[in-house]
Length: 189
Image (cartoon, rainbow, N blue to C red; front, side, top):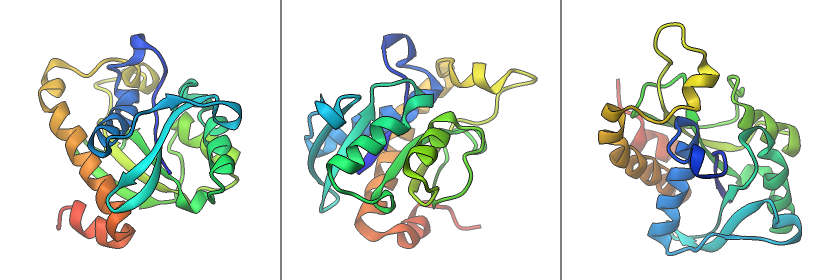
């Protein structure tokens, strides 16, 4: 299951915090998967099933605010009978420069309330992550304010490319596994 994190509604649509949901929209477009609101355990997310990178997948976007993402994710995992180890979360990352994508399994939440909620609801940090770099806030700007602002005009010029790169990284992760995908996605130093 691939989950793209964001906040609901048009007021948040262009926010940095919503880049995970933007990447999920790109993945759904590529796979021809229509995201629709569910019922019962799936009621607090838009989701759809199909094939991506040669695998059967569930794509999902919680319809709750970021800090409540865990409930819908847990409901979908339970409904589809998937362990948290088969969960891929696509999210914004302050600690990575804008335009950079990184893959990893587990680790801390780094103050990210969406990840904290998912960790709490699944009982583990050992899920896969597609970390989409949004960079640090300028000067002394509060990180919470920074993530809830739209991308700057300069960032928007490169945003489509970033979404494609993050979607490509997600597909590589699904197709080849974490280590091979990291070797492909992460630049060599």
